[in-house]
Length: 212
Ligand SMILES: C[S@@+](CC[C@H](N)C(=O)[O-])C[C@H]1O[C@@H](n2cnc3c(N)ncnc32)[C@H](O)[C@@H]1O
Image 1 (cartoon, helix red, strand yellow):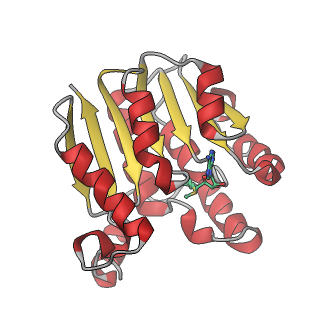
Image 2 (cartoon, protein in one colour):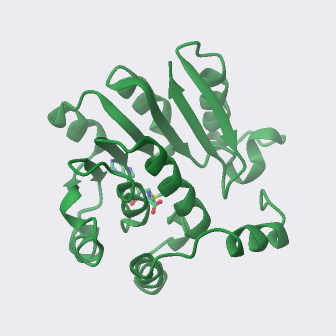
Image 3 (cartoon, rainbow, N blue to C red):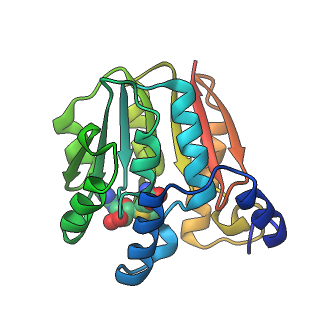
């Protein structure tokens, strides 16, 4: 199920900023060469991530789930002059392509790619005072990552989680393991008083969480 009517989505796409050339190229290469290209954030969601990042002007961003680098580049667009984005990807086969994608952008120098399982890399990195976290990896661990990272995010910082509407299944009668897991994540975050939260019906549902 599409969350938004395709005609509405087309209208939204054509009335936001155009997709930068380097991101168009990452998009094209992903669809030509990589499995499951629909995982990439894409034009409209990418502009949302870029806008949120530019509003916060972060010094430190953590992304969990790099894939082919599209969302990392969008988030890095808003980094402060001395800011850094750490991004974690478990699939080492993507490393070469990722380095070439990042080199083709003007934010290359601000991105640090880490290849390995997220939890182990996060433990090694020991990041603190994070301004933005984007969680977009193995969905069953979403809540685990949220719990691990909450203390490391500065007050007023954002945690953004992708795919929380799960093609609309979370508010239907579906009871497969993935849907139940994401429904539970949304319920747990909805009652968490340490954070403010809002699900936006963008693409597959994006949960914006602000630490109080
Ligand atoms: C949905 S894709 C990320 C899409 C990307 N954020 C974007 O918007 O363009 C999920 C990625 O997370 C990676 N991944 C899955 N489990 C992971 C883990 N435990 N640690 C790090 N990366 C993981 C997958 O290999 C895949 O490339």
